[in-house]
Amino acid sequence: MARPRSISDERLLTATEEVIGQVGPGFTLAQVAAEAQVAVGTVAQRFGSKSGLLQALSRITTVRTVESMRTVAARKRSPMDGLRSAAVNVYVGLGDADRAANNLGQLGVDIGDPELRSLLGEHYAAVENELRRLVRAAAGELPSAPAPTRAARALLSVLNGASLDWSIRPKGRLVDRLEQDIDAVLVGWRRKEE
Image (cartoon, rainbow, N blue to C red; front, side):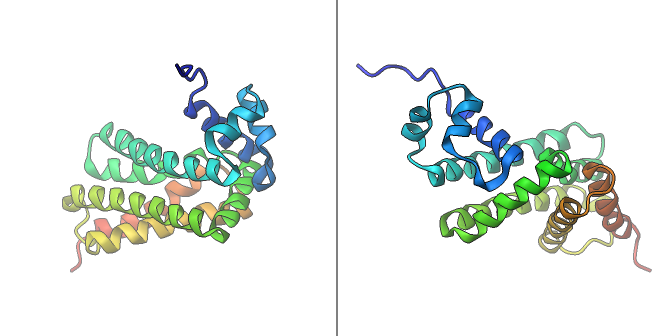
């Protein structure tokens, strides 16, 4: 009879996120194991390799991000406030400039790996789909917004660009930068065309 797992995948993936934030893409399974307070064999046995670990992390990050966007949006009084808060929430977890830079370094590695790049594409598609849903819900408050598909793509581009730029040239807090840049777009969409 197999022993029940006492170490959850969630614990190992959370440790992986923490280690990537601390050291970037050069992290090792040993560092993840130390952060999770488990043996290296536990991580290797569960995920097979660093690539397998990153693939699992990518999948869970997509689920977490969309769930978080929905939760944040649902707490707001208006669909417009929900859209704004959900959009800002996408990258709020990047942390300080050093952690953001380490995550950006991992992004570069992900783009270079076909499997990880595919999962990254799925992540962006899921975020864009959630933004599209939220744009539709806020349509009455955004009379000048483009069609929901284009609006969602534009918002995602603003988020990706702002987070990348802030990671390279941090000034102030990331959340403030995201709010400012999203607001710059939404203000224009709130005005009725004459």
